Length: 286
Image (cartoon, rainbow, N blue to C red; front, side):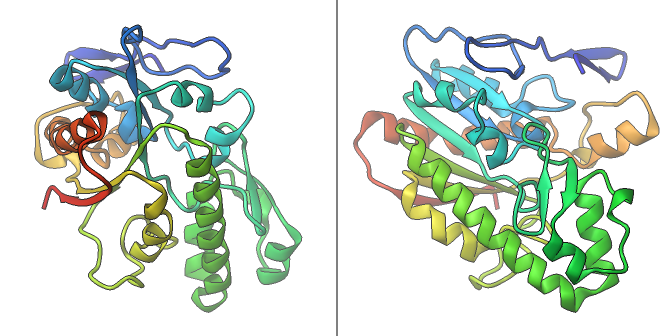
């Protein structure tokens, strides 16, 4: 959608396309002639319902072009697919990679749409055996499916959870191994990660990205930033056209959160581009 209501104004996403990539991204296209940072992620990177998402703010703060490759509900299936944004990221001086949900990727139990990774396509035989009483034709989105299966049989769901986590680690490892530029892994959470590595409430319940999962992929990144961001319900900001759209918008980070994410990334990015500092782990935005 090109526009969302913002009070009496609208947010113009100015969609753009780049050569060799089938997808559209949020514009305007930055000046890439003097190098750029590729910002990959989901709705929070795209900046749904906000006028200035964190990639645009980071560009203003650093003076370096920031290519917004955010796609709502994107996951590694989209990033690794032919015609995806990976070639654009490969040409960057650095990549900021927002951690995706653990449910929006194909795995031994179900498959997702190759471009719209939140779309549930089909149940695999393993899932039909695990939940023989469920009619999977009723589901169109992964989150609806996951919450339904978890509520129906939490004990059986643990098998699915374990498979999702293994698939996420494998796919993210493959993605990081294919990215030539230094990568800053960006975790956006509604609450701070648990102190223990096995805490299962870090990002997306009931199939979260846990600290243990993050620890498995972090060595392949140049830096890690974990940002605990508030929803935008407590600040003036975007207003969507109807009740359903407004409910979605309220769950997304607002302008102050985007500003804080950009500020947290700025010194980490500067250190990497200056090639003066090695890998680090930054705990940001308490």
